[in-house]
Length: 314
Image (cartoon, rainbow, N blue to C red; front, top):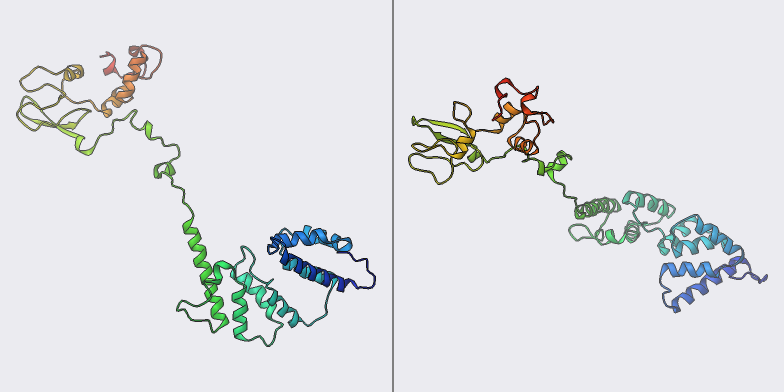
């Protein structure tokens, strides 16, 4: 905008410039886009107007074309007019609309401050301008009440808009993906399921107890080991059974485990009591040829932690 003509005042030149800008933007492609309008105005200003534009845009990150032209007119073409006229002009331009991320209470506050100078504003006009300034996500929800009727009271409209905003935010929160966390790892981050069965044999409740029949016909309940079957009376069972079978030679498992007078099955409790470790840990120590009691480098018989009853290695 060139202001070299001394015969025209700055105010007249500013109004004429904005009039020509509006006409030009109606003819060019993309002239209806707000960013294009602001960029065109910034590139065509000169002199003091350009300096003012640089300072005004640097002080704010986001602005619209209507806000820019209103500020330009207020700076270079101010008009002395009543406050109610200014308020009606602002309503007509629509520059009072809800800003991004603005809440209903905040919008209500600056809307009521805007329309306060308009003394003769009717209830219907107040409802109309309030609905017009709502965001796109709330304008449709607040067009009518839940019964499909138009609002007759401004206060009812405000209360309904607050409820619609809360429902909209709740729906957005429900659509957000929720991270799925394993419940066991959430309780104990150091938990590792792969390490559970390294030292302890986990059995099902049905396999935890078995009945072993002795030569005298008595049944002894005990904890079963891996691969054992429950004997249910006379007759051979279909799987290997630890201990001596009735009327037959002792099995390999019974011969390997025979060291005590009482025939019993070895469980993790027995291994822990005698060797201070589980059966799987004892097997690993035997493979590594270390002390079976403390996993040290000395022989097992020399271990100071070995109980007197276990001095003789099996």
